[in-house]
Length: 493
View 1 (tube, helix red, strand yellow):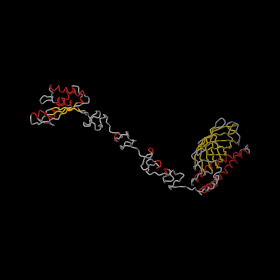
View 2 (cartoon, one colour; view 1 turned 90 degrees about the vertical axis):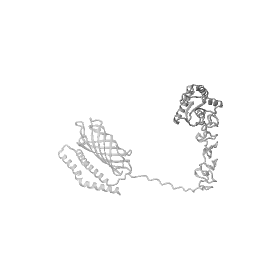
View 3 (spheres, one colour; view 1 turned 90 degrees about the horizontal axis):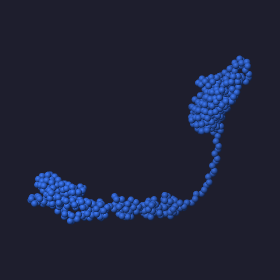
View 4 (cartoon, helix red, strand yellow; view 1 turned 180 degrees about the vertical axis):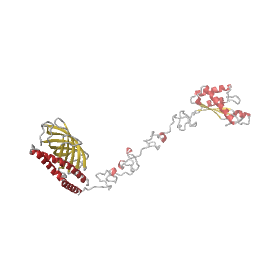
């Protein structure tokens, strides 16, 4: 409905325009021709026809532009419904003006003409046009070569760049190649360069306004010039489409009889277990343990498992609670913190390293994995401990202690793994803190002596305990004498 309203509106505007402008369109060219006839005695009939056509084109060209603007304004009142964003084949004509003085922005002496055109959209953004131009002009650059009322022919092929064609008003750019006949008695090629505006009449037709600067390839015979054109196009076979062939009647085929013995919704032809109800995911077979493995392929159908173990859980060969895939010692029971292996026993003494105080020395379980110190060695150390003497109230070793300490040093150097604790004690005479300091100094004096004799410092530890841990009664002189002592403890841990 809006399309027909648009056409009716354009027709009304065109009639109003003709009523208001008919005098200028019809009478002005006639009056100008009569005046020239009165004062141009040499003019023949062909010349008068040329003058009339030229004046008519120049007058109607200006009014044609006004008519184009009115059509644009009226067409915009209605919604557009374009068939395609690419122009189809179209033919048309136009009225032209050529200004050989190329006096942009001013217009100099112009000659009228017309065009017959063919347009074809190559894509949504490119059009190809072919046009024949007829020009009423006596233009010539050679003196004496001008021909009054001469008629010239031109041919052009151009490409036009523009946005998608499904726009009502569309600007475009033009570039092409043309050839003009008998300018200054020569055929001269030129290049039309410019642009224009296109009014899309809902893909049924187009109104085109073009302005081109035509660059001459031989300015000796043809000047660069300006070309102005207002024309219309009519699309070919607009809206005609081939009728789609009627579809073939459907072939009615009786549905096949589907057998499903186990009633699980899977036809027997597709059911791998046609006599036992199952699931479609397992091709009609059941899965009691829900591990995704059909019972017929599951070695442990009642216990969820893995396909790589034929439906059974990951095995635990040594039954230590750690499956074989995570167990570094799958055939020997172990613990998780050692990757399924037993607690290590580096020295192989039967006491694991977590309980072995001497993990690198074979020992006995009774001695927490450490070797037992030989009884004769203990006895020699105890004798040496009873023969260590200090100056009264001092940590200075007396010379009579040297023999015993030298024997201790020899025992320690003979066994690289053997260590010794030197523990110093006092009686309860005096202040406890002084007794503690004295006992510690005496223990460290013994350790220093042993180190001096070549015993490694990390094998000897000297510690004072003061008046603690008495071994006799401090009320008697004999008891206090026993409590003032140095104990030597051999060990391997």
